[in-house]
Structures are given as structure tokens and as C-alpha cells.
Length: 115
Image: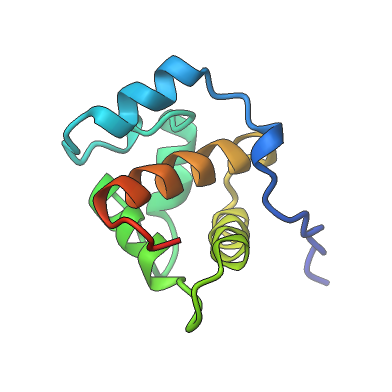
């Protein structure tokens, strides 16, 4: 029987990324290495690369975030969809909100109004 995963909505107030690390990521050029995203280290990179939909670059991760956009603009729903997708990729629970925040904020700078 498959393990049931608890779905807790995205909450920006529970992120643990340092403000300076997030700001640096937002300002920086995207090089493609997933480790440039705050909170993504080797273990997370390995999990993202697994499965039918392997993610191996920051560009692909941002693309996945964009692909999960709801038909009608809804930032909360968009972030929840991305968080649950990350959870399904077996990303550690304590990293989920941090990664969602980083990708959502970076995307907002690249494509204002997207989320």
C-alpha cells in the first residue's frame, strides 16, 4: 500500500532561507546548476533527477514551476502546486517552502506578474 503524504500548503512565513542568500539568488544570472538555488544541495539534486520527469538544471526547474501555473492567476495555488510536485519528487519536507520561495521570487523578477 503506497505511503500517504500529508499535503501542507506553501507558507512563506516558515521559510528558513537567509534574506541575503535569497536576494543573491534573485539578482544572479542563472547558470543552470541546481545548487545555485538556495536550499538545493546534492541530495535534493539527486531526487529531482529521478523519475519520468528528471530535472537536472535550474532552467528546467523554473520551467516546471511555470508549467504548473493555474489557468487563472493565483499565486497561492501556483506555489501549492509546485510544492506538492516537489514533495512528490521526494524533496525533504524541511526544504520545500524554501525552494518554492526561491523559484517563485526569481520567476517574478524574470516574468513580473506570473505568480
